[in-house]
Image (tube, each protein chain N blue to C red):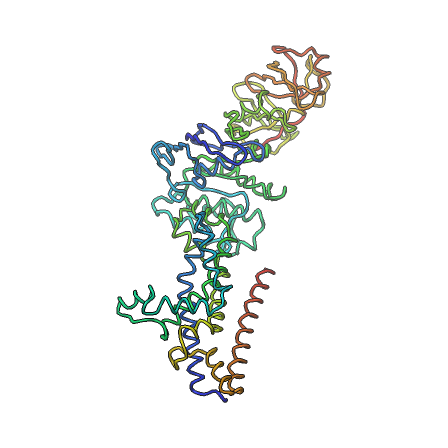
Length: 225
Length: 358
């Protein structure tokens, strides 16, 4: 196989980044989706729009503002420096922060849809069966939203794998730290190493196809039950 | 139990102040959109009326003057929703245990096996709700609500989503609850048939207001209420089984506080058992003299109490007194003129059919 150690390092780094990002996004995104699905607050529309922004913005725009915010003069940078963590650009943590922003809508929206689709009824039923608000969330809302949570995880993971612009803006191209597969493909193409580029690019193509195929057929089997 | 609520809704304001008996089934009856379900949701705390007070025995669940509002999950009530509301992610057994395991062991007055046999759920426990019929699902929902050992059971048109055979399948179970539970039941319905079979007490709702409230026996014959004008206008009589004619297979039923008896074709029933009878207004005809040579079994002396217009100009409704029990007759205006009908008049009622309800 024509893949080099650097390629494997990039693959491993990418999987770590996507896995960690997905896990964190489920933790952040689930309560956020719950709030968006249930609130009658006037803030719902602006917050919802903000969450959806990464869907339409060029990744370079997101990357640029993240770079500025996380840099030594930015608010996030000031915070991380005062906590003794240094600055985030050009670090793996910086990539994670960038990916969280970039993939947020892909996780929040399926979960929000699932919460909205179940309606109030199951929660009202649970309330008449003595379940308090948190109990209802954990034992009724989450299990009923399971298909949405699975879709959210898969989309969040797959979308983070494919990230390029944001990574390039805030991560650069540091082996073992910030060089992910998409950047490595770019490097290969720049160096005219088309064979290696093909292996990585083709691998991502097949992987993404399989993931989306699984998701589609799950959706179909649910429809028929 | 006492409930007072004022809640503005889309097209009208729910505004009721009612006292309900502490035992038996109270039906909230009225046309669709009359506020029945809204009232039930206020009682359950699923909706919060800005002005309201709700007390059940010594418990106060809402008092807007004291800013007191007990959330639903802290109210000792059971609620059965209109449509199947089982948790699809749990088996029937886990659905039944959902509420049960959330109440203190000391508060459990009903064991799972009792609920299972009361509602005939043996054999369904391992199934998923998706694989149950509509009737089975409602039975599971009722059992699940009972297993939280509620002090009040609320049923929101539990039969309305079901077809006639499924309704017939569940009604006997509901009648059993009525007989075996010591707690008050509030039953929302727009089907007079169900109300007549199940209710002891009736609250008539229209446009968010309680038109009238009282025991079923006294509400049904009232000519000033829409009940008497409906096609199924009926009275309910709580009789007692007396003797049984096994030769002709006829059961005699004595009317309350009277020596009058009605006879009905039925299987034997032990003498002394209280029974509920229904007589429809359209099955009662009137005669000036005691009819002779008639095939109609039940010929009883009655006295005219009042006469009122029916739902069409050809008919009249006549409220009759049968030694203390009320009876309704639906006759033509022509017949009324022929008989010279007037309040206080003594007549003979011929009752073509009597239905034994439980």
